[in-house]
Image (spheres, rainbow, N blue to C red):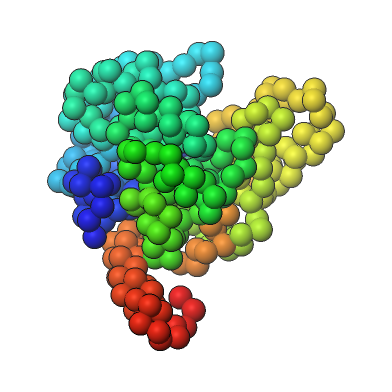
Length: 331
Ligand SMILES: Cc1cc2nc3c(=O)[nH]c(=O)nc-3n(C[C@H](O)[C@H](O)[C@H](O)COP(=O)(O)O)c2cc1C
């Protein structure tokens, strides 16, 4: 399948693995890229720019296909050393960067001068238009369903994607709630040039996280995520667990007085315990509603090959069949 996204990134299939804290290591990024998608290393999971340089080199040893690095611009007073991370990306020869969080504008000139394509992740049409205006090459349009930070507008992808298609000139991929061939074909129908998946890629053989995490996703239904930190305007969609319930109780009892310090135990530094050690109640962790569509732990190649084969059948048989006047079974 050829789209503006496969052309822009030099990949075989229009499927991207979004950056994920303590999940997006070289092993997963390389597996996705080797399967013909675009794998992405999560920059800030690496504790220093030197560590990121090593992770990039490791990934390059594992694949000769294109892969990217995610740079999340955090809303914090003490930001990480972004210029050093960017230097590691440029010197590592990486040609694709997924930016997220705050406006990437201050750092774009460095990336563009190095010939890097930038795909910015946005949760609204206005931020997508801003990304286009400042010179991003593509956007990842992240709907309300998504695991992680859906923003504060709460617009699901059935509305957000066609709205983005109406307004944007640069290509975009759908993100949030994407799991299978139906997601891909629907995204293409709504104007996207591909799709980005997060939660789905955690439940794969190569994702270098504890098996408890994969099994928690397989066991979860679409009813099992919660939104936390809304009172702090830092909303995050997470899997429900003991820490999530405790955090929500604090939000309810403290109301407008809630401060970040009140919930440090539930949110700060919890990812290594969850992702590496499999302590599933150690804190809150991002997970999408799409968990309800995830029932297995395939390899990245099985997952991506399956999606592309089923997308072909969906388009050629179900959709074309309907046009030809045949009654099709449910997909
Ligand atoms: C465990 C987890 C960690 C994530 N960490 C990041 C991150 O560090 N930076 C980022 O830009 N997005 C992060 N995301 C968001 C994903 O890149 C992606 O946009 C999102 O998962 C898409 O929604 P889905 O989970 O429904 O596929 C994370 C998502 C998950 C599930």
